Image (cartoon, rainbow, N blue to C red; front, top):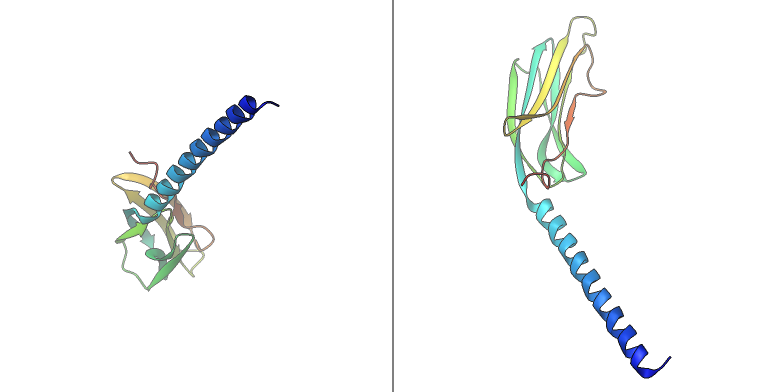
Length: 138
C-alpha cells in the first residue's frame, strides 16, 4: 500500500472515530439528563378492606426505588410523589381478607393513566407499576 492510500485510510478511520465519539457523547448526555429529570405521578387506590398500601416514594436508586408503606389507609386514598429519571412508579395495595376486598389502583401522570389494575383479595403480587415517561416526553 502506498503512502497516499495509508494517509487516506488513516483520515477515514480518524473521521469514523470522531463520529463515533460524538454519537457516544450524545448518548451519555441523554442518559445523564434522563437520570436527573423528574416527573410527578399521582397514585390512587379505591375499594374496601385494604390493610396497607406500599408505593415508590422517589427515594433510592432508579432501579431500586425506596418504598413507603401506609397501614390501615382511609379509602379512597391518593398520594402525589416526584420520581426521578427511569425510576418506575409503583403502588401496591394489600388486603388480608381474600374474600371481601375489592381494590383498584391507578397511576396517572399529567392526566394520562400509566397503569391501572383491579382485583379482589390480596393484590401484593401485582398492584400497579408504571413505566417512567422520562425520555418519551417531548
